[in-house]
Image 1 (spheres, rainbow, N blue to C red):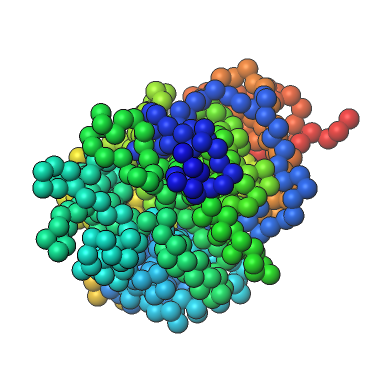
Image 2: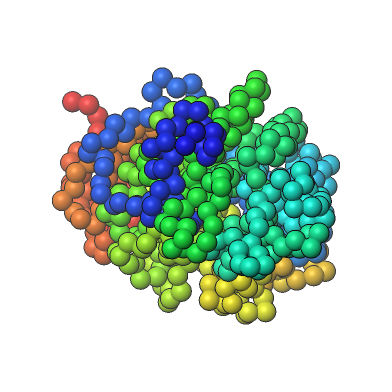
Amino acid sequence: MADDDVCLDNDVTEEECHDATGSGAAPWLGRATWSLEPMGARMNNRLFAGAEASWWRNASIYQVYLRSYKDSNGDGNGDLNGLRAELEHIVALGCDALWLNPIYRSPQCDHGYDVADYRAIDPMYGTLADFDHFLREAHELGLRVVMDIVPNHCSHQHPWFREALAASPDSTARARFLFERGRGENGELPPNSWESLFGGSAWTEVVGDGVKSWYLHAFDSSQPDFNWRNEEVRAEFDSILRWWFDRGVDGFRVDVAHGLMKSDPIPRGEKEQVGTVDAQWDHPGVHAIYRRWRRIANSYSDPRYLIGEVWASNDRAYARYVANDELHQTFAFDLLVQPWIAKRLRAAIDKGLAQGSKTNGPAWTLANHDVHRAVTRYGQEQVDDEPLPEAMIESARRKGSVDRGLGTKRAGAALALMAALPGTIYLYQGEELGLSEHLDLKPTERQDPIWHRSGGKEIGRDGCRIPMPWTKCSPTFGFSEKATAPPWLPQPECYGAMTRDEEREDPDSMLSLYRRILSIRRKRRDEIDRLEWIPLEEADALAFDNGAFICVTNTGKRPIPATALGSVGPIVARSGRSDGHLIEADSTVWFERPAPR
């Protein structure tokens, strides 16, 4: 096998190609084993040595799901002018940047991840002039702006795909996508048994010139996958990146970064014929793409930032994505999906450090637009059984009873734990208010394609995307100041007790905790350059030295004495009411490092 036949990556061996697409791969996560064996004792956990400082190092980045942030015109949808009006909220939290979920022109079949025009703003959110106004004000406030780029697929309404549907099977228009002839006597069967991540087949049939063919869509049928072996596709995305960078955008979060390249030829047949090789995910050919993008990012006097949503097969595979000439960071998702159990949290942190860049550090997060909110997850029964790799994300969308008070306490402690880690932290909007998942949406109110394509078996992601509550004295809790239409997703009544204005005045609120923790992290970010585990006899606790202070988290049901840490200084910050002598259950405390003797 020649490298360029499959890998398009001249420094990848045939063995590595097989390793990245080899047997046992899960459809979404590749071939990840997600071993929870602690690695901290044998790792060099010193980060950033000799690296030039960059704005994203140890930064706090706020994720904005724009449709649910703030509505300025009363149509029930958040928009750019609404975001601009509440930028101060993000600044007051102590954040350095914000990440915008997709705001491009889109038919919204998957809430903007189905892009029809990569150089236009969807009218729901405003205009390019509105975007420029927002970007200028964000920069004036000291906030960097990271956008979402969706390169694996586009919308079925994209001009290229419309052209492809109207073209002949062997046309250059179809070569931009992944069309295959069907199986069966008359091509009536899909090319293989690959399944969409949203449910059902990953193939949809079309007829052109009387010939049946099928196009690949890893997600919804409204999201056809691009053919990234096609130079026209590569050149177009080079141009898109430059277009937004030239406009002043500071970086991109790359959606499904591990999924762009597929095996060539694409395997055919049912699972037993295709074998166990999964040729859809974590293909070595993606690395040539990101080296190309990194050259573009580095061509600016103020280098632009690239972070990938990556699910790879092992630590070695992750490390390739954050090589010095590829992406700056990938998300350390393993922390997000862990239960509130000390040994599992420690193992996830070790894994994130092993997979992350030693130059830029990992990117940590506890929540995003795809999983249940942290308060809900931590308020459910905590299960120590490790899920199968393909069920990791689903495990973060479990149904079940929720103890909201307990979940809130643990979510605050988890925030303090994450904020003590070296690397970048990402904060999903509404987490700073302690919002819980809206689990009681009616079937007629749900909009997530996961819900619809699974026939209601999968609860989907609507419950974590509910519009933000800003003030109690409003039918929409301040989300729409001049409401002429209801919010695009209904807000539960309990959000009235969790509004930004209410919590801003309460020193014991989640918002106040976030502000305290992030303020200290920001002041001491340059000191956070390592993670050295501190041995503890308590199985329900973990502690480490990050170079700035000592962090200890107690996930157990009873307090533990601070003397278990040995010698420590005074308290720097805490998530609960620990007094410096006892570390209460379900809490995190930061102590000053002991003075040298």
